[in-house]
Image (cartoon, rainbow, N blue to C red; front, top):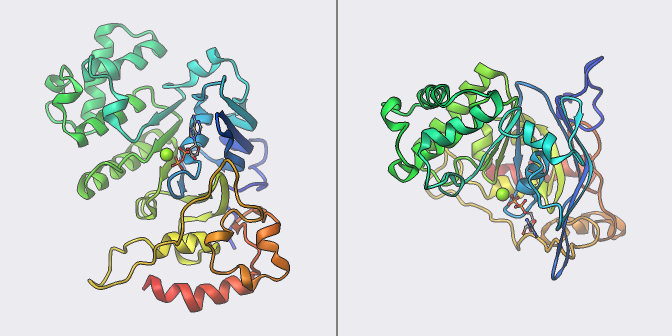
Amino acid sequence: MTTLPTTEGTPAPTGSDPFLSVRDLHVRFSTEDGIVKAVDGLSFNLERGQTLGIVGESGSGKSVTNLAVLGLHNPKSTSISGEIRLDGQELTGAREKTLEKLRGNKMAMIFQDALTALSPYYTVGRQIAEPFMKHTGASKREGRQRAIEMLTKVGIPQPSLRVDDYPHQFSGGMRQRAMIAMALVCNPELLIADEPTTALDVTVQAQILDLLKDLQQEFGSAIILITHDLGVVADTADDLLVMYAGRAVERGSVKEILTQPQHPYTWGLLSSMPRLSSDVDEALYPIPGSPPSLLNPPSGCAFNPRCAFPAEVSGGLCTEQRPTLPDGRAAACHLSTEQRQTFFTEQIKPRLG
Ligand SMILES: Nc1ncnc2c1ncn2[C@@H]1O[C@H](COP(=O)(O)OP(=O)(O)O)[C@@H](O)[C@H]1O
Ligand SMILES: [Mg+2]
């Protein structure tokens, strides 16, 4: 069993904290219908130069977690507790002024949809230059120069002409690149990419992921890559956090999770995912049911209503007691290690081909 840099309770290298450390994070929204527990006790670490993939179906709390890291939730309707430390600095409860200094500078986010993230009214170049000018005090001319440099970096052809284009003059893939340029313009040490390739076709998707890897090599940034698609993280991330209903259900290195997944939910994600080396008539196994309401989540393990294995656990534990996620390479599940080994080998692995 390997010890991972992104694990709860793993001792940090002597004399230094993890670069990003999230501890027992809770994010709750007050709504007309009640309190939505969107993130419910989440912990993870991330080191510089590393990529953490966060995977899980839609609604599992991936975006809410990362918006909390960036301090982008509306304080009026959101209650946040727990610890978020970036490079030793506590971010939960930090003043808006402090967060503003960090956002777009030390930490930046690439959103899923470039079309809504970019303003239609300003040129691409101006939008890339703006955070640079704001955080470095650079002049307009220097900002424009920097925008051209960034457009070159992300592979936009004829950057000194395209810098004056408006977003609608760019293709979808180019807009996504422009947004990456905007996120990276101040060389952020933490980059959060929220489903950065979901709207793109497979070829452009691969190019964007390569680009992120190259830029990480150049800047040594820490990256959080959020996706509902395990295929996306397979080649890009070092470690994975699998989220379900606002909690982490499994964590490990990408290799461990793809070859020896331990949680029935992860088994479900893998079995429902098309494989690259697939036969034409290969069957997929969708996870039955849908994610639970976060207003009133199921008791015990939140995954129990969709899980095939609660009957294997004695004492009705799965419906009564919430499994915890132990430190290190682990899964939050009441099945014993031996049971998981057996069920995975006999029932799940044959499906994965
Ligand atoms: N501002 C909000 N108010 C109320 N509920 C919200 C708000 N933002 C997100 N949610 C809910 O929180 C849950 C997690 O959302 P999100 O983090 O966006 O999921 P995803 O894993 O798809 O990124 C969802 O059930 C979503 O409906
Ligand atoms: Mg999301």
